View 1 (tube, rainbow, N blue to C red):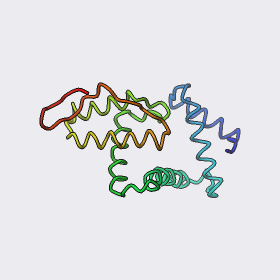
View 2 (spheres, rainbow, N blue to C red; view 1 turned 60 degrees about the vertical axis):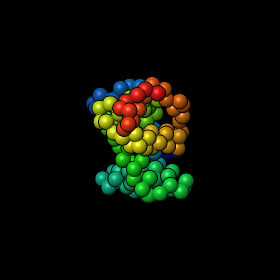
View 3 (cartoon, helix red, strand yellow; view 1 turned 45 degrees about the vertical axis):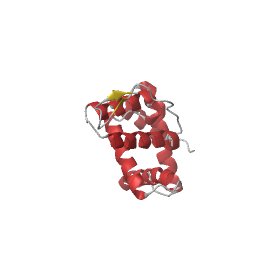
View 4 (cartoon, rainbow, N blue to C red; view 1 turned 135 degrees about the vertical axis):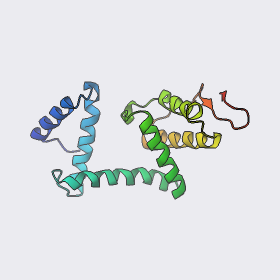
Length: 160
C-alpha cells in the first residue's frame, strides 16, 4: 500500500473535519483513500482526474460481483443480492461496513416483516443476501439471529 502524500493528507483531514465525520471513523476513511490511491497507481489513473473515482467505483462493483461469480451463483442471484444490499445500505443510513453488527441485520429483517410486510420468501432472500455479504465481502460472521420477526403468509407474523 502506498503512502498518502502530505498535501493530500492535510486536505483530506480538513475535508473529514468539515464534513463532520466522527473522529473514530477517520481511520476507515483514510483506508479507503489508500485503496483509491493504490488503484490509481496500479491502473495508471491520476487521482486528480475526475473520472478516476468512477473507474475506482466500477472496479469495486466488479470485485463484489466476483465474490458471487467465482462461487458459480447465477446472474439473477447477483442482481437480487445486489438489490438487497442496496436496500440494507439505505436502511442503515450508510453506516461504515466495518461498523455493521448482527443487530443491524436483525433490525432490517424485522423491518421487512413488520413495516414492509414482505413475503417469507423475500425475507429469506434478504437474509441469504446479507449472510453472503457478511461472510464473503466483509469476512465477518453474524452468528445465529434470534428474535427476528419473520414473515409468514399463512399464519401472519411470528417470532423465532
